[in-house]
Length: 399
Length: 200
Image (cartoon, rainbow over all chains, first blue to last red; front, top):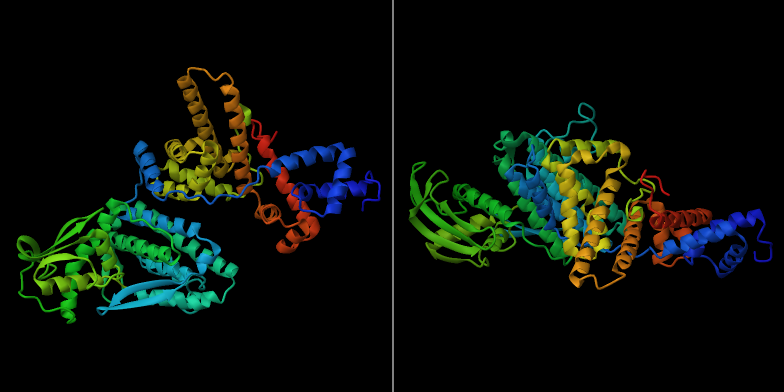
């Protein structure tokens, strides 16, 4: 193409179209030579060529920004302090807001290959460790499916019915209220098993995960927003959690924040990322939920024969035998757990056992990440009660 | 100092204007949840621009706080009909960061007792450079994905335009067009828009 006169208008058009590629050194040597020859006698192309070359100097790798996840709460707190919100987040929704944002930031930073990492989920079932390997997308789907229970209670759509024909058309779909069943249903329909995900190309896997992440995140926002508008009015609304179990909405939000944190930790571990603990005030609320659930769990374990029967019967509201739970570190504190019955009153005068452990270790125990025997707890008092207490804590975990 | 102001919005990759208007209404109503969502969506943009200008994480943290606090306190400062929220926030981040940079230069000069004669010129030259770099970052993130992908293949992966075309599954003419248009957009980083918002 070098032989022809460069003033030919067709040549001018072609050479002009090459200017971008030329500036980026992304054309052949012959094309480059032709462009450069053209520039000597075409003023408008020469101007553009100079501008495009300068523009190339502005290109540089987009550094992956490590925005400190702790900044979010600081920035928001400063802003909300300067102008008080008319529609604040309920205190009990704050950990959920923060933990879902932290997990989303982790997902944002993940590279293509990391979406293919298998994640091991572990929990306690009938006092024995259980575990399951699942894809990262499966973890997000699990969180989304169980969060859906809260959504249903607030009158929001069930994410498990996504893509189903509108109500009234097609077969009616049952509303599942058991967290495990909801999760298994989602995993089966979405093909979340690690082996299934491994068969996809990295690109398809990424796009599948992106879709699940989008639905999960949208649901997070709807839940937070709806709870904010409803405020205290819905705090005690019952959220079904499977067979006969129900939690007040405020506790369901804490439970969901706790599970989000623990599974984010599972994902981070699977891809070798650091993951820090929640804000101390949030951590305290999460530990408090576990401590408040324990008397009921202990009673239930007795009914089903997993724990020894109560030593004595105590009238509701009367002081009963008490375990002092002391959690050390960020967000920690002291809790007094009535052992005889959930209705009994904890009483320092009737302390029969003292268990002290790191708050984080307690959370890991409650999440089924560490066994009751291995939990590094300092204790004194009645050994049987302490053992029952630790097993009851582990049994708070579930898929 | 018009050359340090103004972040152009090349070819809006922004959501529909209705969404920005809704966000603004939610902020005006005092909905804390809306502020959280806004942060999640735009904090990386605001922080990234501030860091590019200031090259100092602590100072970029401050700009991030200032920009979001300002919008929360003055939701009406953003006018949806004048453009997308995304470019408004980019502009604010840029302005706040440049103001800080200039302020720290004045302080440094005061400490030196005015010894450095040409430090004004140095500061302005630096502001021009970092401003162009920050605008370029913004332009790259805001340009259509097809243009960005072409530039990435040609520049970072050193593909020629024929291979770029093959990778993107487009014609060679289209690959040439994308590379040229992408660089044209990027070059506007050196020539910021005039105060009425139109590129100069």
